[in-house]
Length: 255
Image 1 (tube, rainbow, N blue to C red):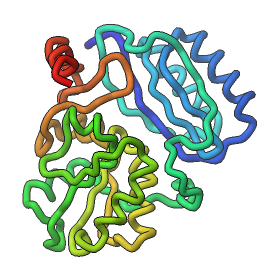
Image 2: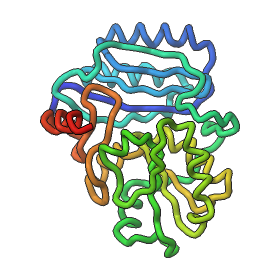
Image 3: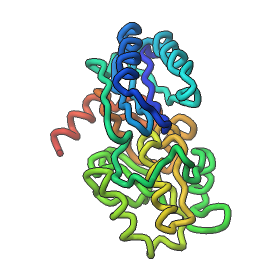
């Protein structure tokens, strides 16, 4: 087992007194020698943290003592070294900016599909009702370049705020398809899934836990390449190992 535990976690939940909450969480992280980034907003929390397993598990246990964070679940991966240089907690307006205030995942999630069930659909090419399945990548263009699902639809967007207009432009041509939106860890799809339903794309789902959960439960089936992550590991392979250094250097040289 590699010595450093990395977790990605988010939760849409109403939060207040963000400055006070930031201080408490930062003190706990520093006391446990954790590093990474946490976003605090009025609509919830988003975290990428790394440290020793005992300290990081202990932090999550501590955080869940606050009833607002009790449902929080984390996705694990492991690394040889600490992938973050410092501990940052930022206060933002949205966990993931979409500029559609009516889309509130805390009030109700979009339909989701588990990684194992998705693999079944992709193996067949159709869902349980016989409709063709189309994977919809909600990530930015540079992330897609690292890897994505085979034949996935993506829009070469530069930021998530461009996604609503991009998917709306394809609404008619996708009307008879079953759509599965996905992103790195699932957070963008909490909003994209609701938005797609709002504009009438009724046969749409979000991939539960995103690419990272799919890697954990399924592996590389129907996926090509790696998955970009927002830390110094750069990207993870389907076995959740970081990409080899030589591949990282080659990608930078050809970019």
